[in-house]
Length: 140
Image (tube, rainbow, N blue to C red; front, side, top):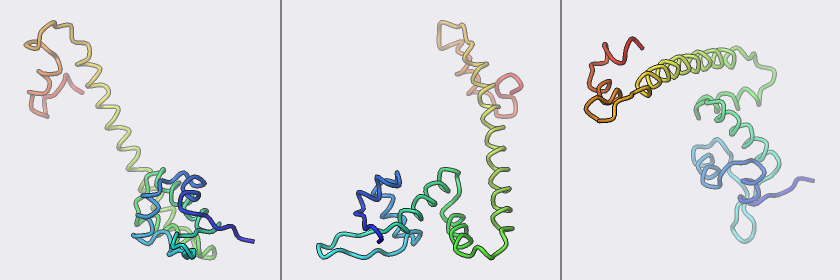
């Protein structure tokens, strides 16, 4: 027997906000649902599993379109997963680039955070923000 869930229960089960569930329905990531006699949406176990899949994909940073591709692949287990592998590698490269950028930002912020000036006139951060990008903050 399949359980039927209200949107509120589905939200609690999946950890996805009600507004987000409605958005996923609007962009057709989550299929149309049946309605109870009172007009409320009803969801089943497959909706809960699909929504969990979507949430986990979003947590990993995949776009809506990428998740759509992954859902298609998940429904065709006989297909090769080269597309998913390619997508994962590209996403990993992007994440690693962001990590490098964040490390550079951290170094720059640490340098200006060591300001010992008591006035804005000699503030390290304010001075660093006025320097053109190519010469910014002491060889970041």
